[in-house]
Length: 318
Image (cartoon, rainbow, N blue to C red; front, top):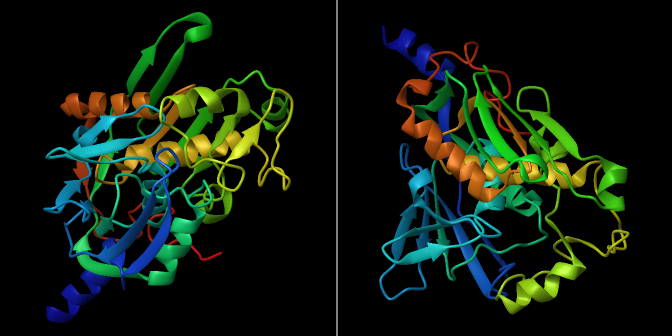
């Protein structure tokens, strides 16, 4: 009986953490502040916790859809008066690598932007190593469609979940700009067929020179530049090395969406699609899903064979 149970547990789809702690130092995209971040292994069922260690009394902020307190330009989480801004790129890397449990010590109120994608976070996490934990990984499985939408006509935007045995995302943007038009305004990524590290992780955030003065006057984008964003004037991309992908803009929106949606606290089994959505609408969609209790269920998998493709093996290194 003991031998049979051991085989059973080994086949179970398990939670993951990192093997050793790892650190990063960088600058906040919007605050321009220097920030140090330490990522620590965590026991099963801890979830993902950000810890503001710079405060007189450290404050833990456990991720959840309800922990999101601001979505202007980025996703911000908060608890007990403390906040952490711009969590979506790190959250996307954690989602892409299937990390369930981790504690993130941070010395300022914004996650460092690094190169403007999630690739540096992926490198940090993979360098620390990924450890399987002998506890079942839990998923939120969508069993009924859920949609949120705003506006009409040229102002329409929407985001939707539909049932799917796996996790796939399709995003369509709508920017009337020559550089965006030339590379593609939509992209679809299926966790079971694609490779997050290869196909999504290196897509950078982007912005327009005409918006920079307005943002900086509002205290935003103080740490932004050509080394951590795609920057465009009215006609072209200004970065000397150009784009990293076809449809890099739409791919980055998928990167962001993965991070925003992982704030629900568990990996999703769903098909997500969106048109002109953003951080705010992604959080609205999560809250709408959770409010409709007959639209989802918590599941785990006794065997890797039962699990959707893409979840059993940690993502490959570069």
